[in-house]
Structure formats: structure tokens, C-alpha cells
Image (cartoon, rainbow, N blue to C red; front, side, top):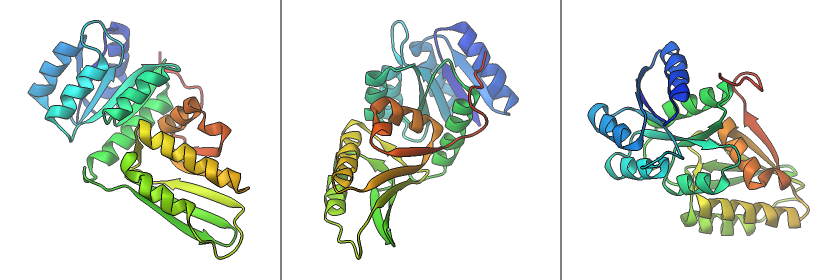
Amino acid sequence: MKILVIDDEKPTLSMFKLFLTAYGYEVHTAENGEKGLAIFKEIQPEIVFTDIRMPGMDGLEVLRQIRASNQRSQVIIITGHGDMEKAMAALDLDASDFINKPVERKALNSALTRAEKRNRMPRDLCFELTPVQAADCLEIYVQGKLAVSGKSAFEALSGFEAKSPITRAIFLFDESFAIDREGISLLMAGVQQLKEKGIQVFMKGLSYNYYRFFQMAGMDKMAVIEAELPGEFGDALP
């Protein structure tokens, strides 16, 4: 499988090339967005890592142009810690995933695992929100990309008729889950409605990187979030 890494910092490129090659990938690198797009068009990699802040063409423009020409490649954005607005903008442009600098091994492993799985999924997977009651718990299965089109699903969730009182709600995200700015607003509003009914909210199945993003968005103040955590905490790459 071919991977392209675009970053203006040579140590970052060297680190990615070292570890990704050791994982068995065919790794190509570029020091700026223009060169990265030229290599992308030539080799058509399955996975692209691109830094979001670069001189000249930044990572958002790289993502925008890749999405305009190719819907199959998984584009993973490399962001600075706490760069919430840029991460939001990347999600609006259908970024596959994102990781923060300094890059942790578990974050890299999570992004690679998710990208490979998403490569095997249909691109036109519809968003689905499926509530199922089990005793006092409402299990809410989430599939596909949550965007403004998911508003009707959350309206249906707010009108869900429980067979008996519910004290807990668990959002269960599958591997196809993605979200954009409007989707985050919908999800937070849905969680808030559940909390106002006295229901404790949990979230399970998020990738490690989405878990970190939800923390940045303040979702962890509203719900108990559990992530799929590959490897050990604190394992930063050099």
C-alpha cells in the first residue's frame, strides 16, 4: 500500500518514513503542498498524511484538491495541539482522520488502522442512527458521516418512545463514523437533550484520534467517552 506524507519539516518526514517503512508501506514524501499534489497525481496513494500549516499551499488546500480529484484516498491531517478551528475546517472538507504533533505511536497506529478499514468501505455509506432499548439503557448505533443531513435522525431520537424509564444512553460508533462541523452541533444538542431528561450519556467505539478531537470540542464534559486505544499511552515518536 502506498502512503504519501506532506510536511515542510524534514525531521517529521524522516520520522514518518522510518516508521511507515518499518510497517511495510511504500512511503513517498514531499516538503510542500505543490510537490505533494504532483506526487499524488503520479502515484495515486491509498493514504495521505499532510501537515495543516505549511508555507505556500497549506494542508487544507491540499485536502480540497485531493477531494476534488479523488474520493478513494484517505487523507489524514496533521494538526498542532489544540488547533480546533483548523481541525473543524478539515472535517468540513471530508478529512478521513487527524493526528496531533508531537505524533504519538498510538495515534499513528489508530489513524492507519482506520484508514485501511475505510478504504474497504463504500464511499456513499448513508448516515444511520439506530436506537435500541435494553432495560433501562438506550443503545444508539451510529454509522456513516454525521452532517446536517442527519438532523431528521436526531429529531426522531428526541421523540423515541421508551418502553420503560431510561437512565443511561450509549452512543456506539462503528468504523465508518465520520463527522463535520454541523454534525458536531447536532450531536452535542442531542446529548444535551438526553441529559436534560436525567439520562447519563456514554460514547464507545471512537478511534483514539476522534476521542482526542471530542475532548477538544468539550464533548467529554457532557458524556463519558471510551476510545479504542491501540498500544500504551504516552508513547511519543521522536
